[in-house]
View 1 (cartoon, one colour):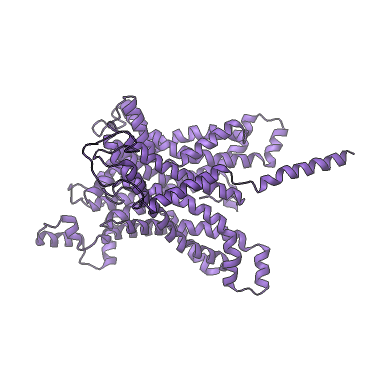
View 2 (cartoon, each protein chain N blue to C red):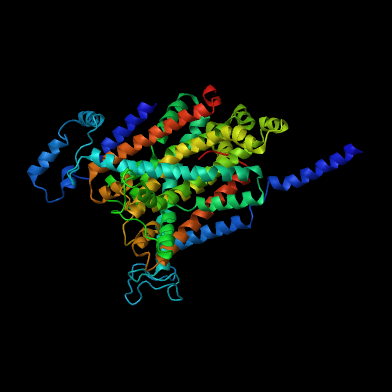
Length: 293
Length: 306
C-alpha cells in the first residue's frame, strides 16, 4: 500500500515538475520583446514619425522641464529631448547590431568549423583566439579609435565588431563541442550526410538558442561600450545625438537641468535591461548549461 | 604564452602610431609645422628606417623605461604615467575591497535559501544593476549626492595624494569607489551565488552537515573555498572592464589618474602619451590575469592536476 501511495506521489511530483521543465517565457519576457521592438521601430522610422527636429534650437524654451509640448523637456540649447532620445537610439542600435553582425558573422562560422573539424585547424585557431582574448579588448578599442581619425560610425562598428570575434568564437566553439559529440551527429555521419548538411541542419539549430541569447547580451554590452566611448569623446561627434554623448553633455549642467541626464540614462538602462532579460530567459528556457561569458 | 601575448601587445601599441592618416609628422605637429621641423621629427621618430628596425629601437627604449617625450607638454611619458598610476591602483584596490566585502556575505545569504524572498530581492536587484553602465551610475550618483544633497564632490585641485593627507584622500575616493564597486559587486554576487548553490548540493557538504558542523563553518570552510575559484576567475576577467570604467569615472570627477590623463591626451592629440598609456595598461591587465590564474591554482589544486 505504501508503494502505491509512493507511486502516486512520484507521479504528482513528475506532474508538478513537468510544466517547470518547459516553463512559459512569461509576461515580462514579452513586455521586454515589445519594448525592444518599439525602440527598433522608433530608430528606423525616426524621420517619418511626428517628432520635432532634434537639431532645432528653440531659444525661447531653454532647459524646459517635461510638458505636453516637449514630452521630455528641452536641453540647454532648446532642442527637444524626446526627439533627441529617439534619434539617439539610432546610433546605439546600429553600433550594437552592426558590430555583433561582424562579430557573429566571422566568429561563429569559425567556431563551429573548429569544433566540428577539430585537429590542427582547431588547435591553431583556438590558441590564436586565446592570445587575443588575453588582450584587454576595451583598451584596444579605445587605442585604435583614438588613433584612427577621423572617427565615423562605420569605424566604430568595425573596431568593436572585430574586437568581439575572439569572444564569440570561444562561446560558439564551446557550444558546438557539446553538441558535436552527441549520438545524432554520429548517426548523421554514419548515414553519409555531407559536412555542410551536418553543420547547417544538425549543428546550427542546436546551438542557435545559446547563440541568440549570447547575441542579445552582446548587443547590450556593445551599447554600453558605445556609451562609454562617447564619454571619452571617441564616438560620433555632437550635434548628432547618441544616448552616450547626450548623458556626457548633460553632466556640465546637471544642476540646472537634471532631466537631461535622467531621460537618456533611463532609455539606455531600460533597453539594456530588456535585452539582458530576454537573453537570460531564453538561456533558461532552452535549458542551456551555464557558459561563462 | 605570457611572453607571446606581451610581444603582440607591444607590436600592436607600436603600430598604433602608423594608423594615423597621412603624414604622421603633420598630424603630430599640426598643419602649420615648418618642413625642417617635420624632417627633424621624422628622423626623431626614426621613420626613415625600415619598420622592423623602428620596432627594435622603440622596444629597446621601452624596456629601458623610456617611453619617449610628449610633443605637446615636452615631458617624459614615463614620468607622467608614473605620477598617475598610483591613483588607478588605489581606486581599483578600494573598489574591489568594497565589492568583495558586500558580495560575499550577500551571496552566502542568498545561497543558503535559494528562491527565498531575500534571494529573490537580491537577485532581481543585482540583475537590474547589471544593466546600468558605470558611467550612468556615476552621473546619477553625482546628481544625487552633489546636487540634491548639496555635498560638493572634489575637483582636480582638491585631489590629495594618500601620503599627504589620507583622510582627504579617502574622502575624494568615496564617490569613484562606490561607482566602481557597484559594477563589480553585481558580477561577483551573481557568480558566487550560483556557484555556491551548486557547491552546497555536493556530497561533501551533506557529509559535513551529517557530522554536525555548523552552518557558518560549512559555508566558509567547505563551500566558499571551491566556489571562490569561479569568483577569482571572474575577478580576473573583470579587471579590464573595471579599468575602462575607472577611466570614465576619473574623467567625470576630475581625478588625475591614468584614465583622466588618457582622455586629455586623446583630446590634445598627444599620441605618444596615448601609446604609452595603452602599452602600460594592456601589459598590466595581462599580468594581473596571470597572477589570478596563479592564485586560482593555489586555492584549488584540482585545476592544475586536470
